Length: 318
Length: 318
Image (cartoon, rainbow over all chains, first blue to last red; front, side, top):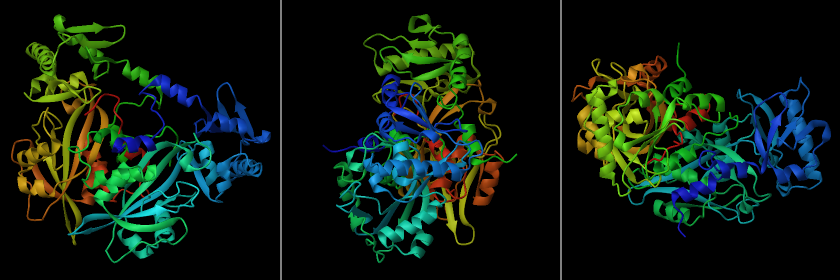
């Protein structure tokens, strides 16, 4: 079964929209508790009911309203970002020790930001725990490509290591990685480009182009590793890098098996076969739209694709 | 008062979102009747209550449900696209003869498409009447620019004729125009580029790049001419054209006063002063995002801007 571009979008922007079918949306959202932090009225994430039940919530800092389906981190009135982050870290490390959640076995010792409605940094949370709380996460994705008269535009495509916990063996974007608390997206890109693809810092700094961001609400399935049904609202900052044919990306850590230069036709076939990690497929769809490869004339779902890749998240964001 | 990019987005994507403040949204949407066509369950547009009251609806083909706030074009079960279009044309020409609406004084003799939920062409409607019904309309916008070592990137900016009925004297995109029923976006662009900017067909065909589409819900104010409060959900197909410095856009019809080559700084200043027509300002914002001029590092509303320019319209679209 060949996947259309809209099929690929549906696999990434997976959580339903309230307007499309209010009854179905209600049925889906009823499977989650809202995540809040005391002192802030906004919903900051969504925790699956089954996670709420299993989590060993330390009573001193959590309040659970089962009727309203709200889980609140209760903090002192004078709490700071640091206080809130410590309470989250404390709670997650208890859950980790109790080995309650598979996803925490991939503990990263890396902090992700949680923003409030005024874009203020409310707290940081251990990366591997962020999906349990369904908070918005941020990352960078770059497509490196080469243009020549013979092959036209070709894209550098890495294959993920077959031993990786998440999405083993699937195709990926040339460079991709998560943005930690305090990290500027472009600096994150420069770091990841070296760590994952051995791309020289000066090449990335001089030639990588900032071209937008994509937003969507993913729902984790088995291929992502760990618990399924976790909500992952994501924002990916997007970059293009036209490379000189002499610059060759190479694996640097163990995350990537190899890099190959693919023709557009080969990339399209692999996308249609579902060989790309879902959020990497939509980065390529955005690349195709911006480079005039997908056009209003050749793609029947042009409008829907564009809107769905730029979903307005109903949670505070950066 | 200098306008931020988000201010400019707010002036274009003006209709509120249900999620932001459900009570306020209800208050706003209550000022409209839904527009439907019999045989199709979807809402196709929104008609202001004051338009519903003033319109001389021919009784034989309209049913108005005041309680549910629905206006339905009643057509025979075997109605075709042509039948429905004729009924709309007939009704609008009655309103035009009665001179009930200012906006119909700008009658264009140009048909805009109305699509159903399966992307089927349900009917066509006279362009000047489309905003009365609040149906989705489609257009093309192109930014032509020149790059040189001395000035960097410069943009060709036209000023609208000061005698034009809509948005007189405001700044515009290099080329912009509406897409009629049956017209392919790229062919519309080629035609408008010649008509509005005297750009040679072969230059546009060879060098114009399809780079995406923008969607938003505008609410007409006095500057747009005609009735105020009309809802205009729009989709603009976007094109970039890098021009050789020897190719000079020139006015061809009476719509444009002149074209000038503006530096980025001058364009930014004019945007901040609100000198661009609102939907042209957002086309430039999208251009700035795709060309790395607006970045996650220099723009605090980066995510919101991107999502709002790609609004998922809650009406059937092409």
